[in-house]
Image (cartoon, rainbow, N blue to C red):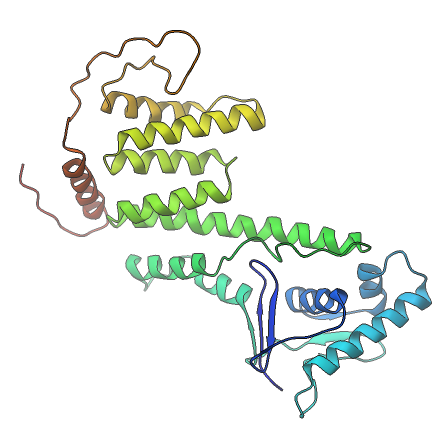
Amino acid sequence: MGQIRMALLGPLDVCHSGEQLSVPTRKALALLAYLVVDGGAHTREELAGLLWPESSTSKSRAALRYTLSCLRAALFDGHGSGHLVADKVLAFDFRTAGDVDVDLRAFLTAAAPLQPSETRRTFVARLQHAASLWRGEFMEGFSIRDAPPFDEWVTRQTSDWRGRMESVLDQLSQTQTDEGLVRQGRETAERWVALSPLNERAHQRAIQLSLAAGDRAAALHAYATCREILRRELDVEPAPETEAIAHRARLASGLSGVEEVGTTRGARTAAFLQAPLVGRADELGRLVEAYYSLRGGHPHAAVL
């Protein structure tokens, strides 16, 4: 059997024996993706209902037989197409052995929790690999016009895998920061915000790490963006935790705690000085990085 490589985190990409898989219908690709992701065996009735829900039993079974024959022909490499197995009881069983490379499996392996024998730096590298596998949403842009059950399955998968990616970015940004990698943690947090702009925790992390890097202007801008999105999309105000982080950013910038950042309503309240560290953003950022690195168990010395 030739090797199958499937990438589903982003636009669907399938290769067989080093070449792009060519099949005559989108439903053949849909069937292949479903069998790979769900695994195990499936009845003919289940698969027919998934892809041909509006057809009669006889027509949907005939369409299923045709689609299966297309897949077998596409996967034939001179030694058969043993990836697909059929019998009278359980229709198809996709054998996901070593000759099947699926990005979902690699993602789950890389996103596994920190192991007792694993260093945090290794954990960071592993999470970074998981994040690099994300090319976009699950089967992004792929749909079938007359198969609502299949599209509903894609929607569920999309939500599940986005949640997993959010968890990776959450853990990665926090662990990078704990290891003193504030700049990298900030970039990860910003990627988290871009992936899930309605997740206030992601905004909080981005604001915190901008502040930790000594970039108070960016922290305040990130807060203003968060507030605008929450108001526009959910008609809610930021949570008290978010407001508290923004308040620290205002104090660090020498702004009054009551001044609204980015507001256009009325005259802005004059800022009063809070003894900001003027002209020392880089130095402050390095001190913060040293602090978080120390928290992660890496000794540092700083001379003021």
